[in-house]
Length: 107
Image (tube, rainbow, N blue to C red):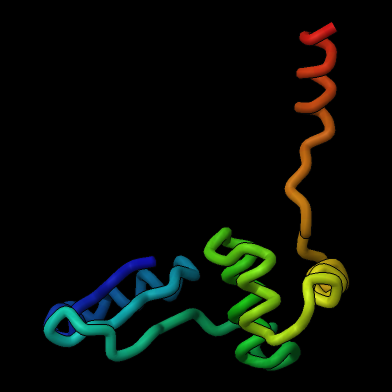
């Protein structure tokens, strides 16, 4: 996540543009205190709702754990996993090939 001061934003608005084009979250500050967040727009915001789309994106980028994701959306872990699964988001980061290599080296 990038942080941009309001004065810096006034003198160089391209900083925010580049951040949005890179799909990064950007915190905007005034005198080092957060005053807002900027995030890029995508179609999921319309189809899934702003809060859900932001939480799913934050989960995918590793900013939120499954527990934090569920708590933010006020749902239990089971429903959080179902929601992520329906949206095509991996709930468990598991690489079978890496595990097989480890098992083969172990044996």
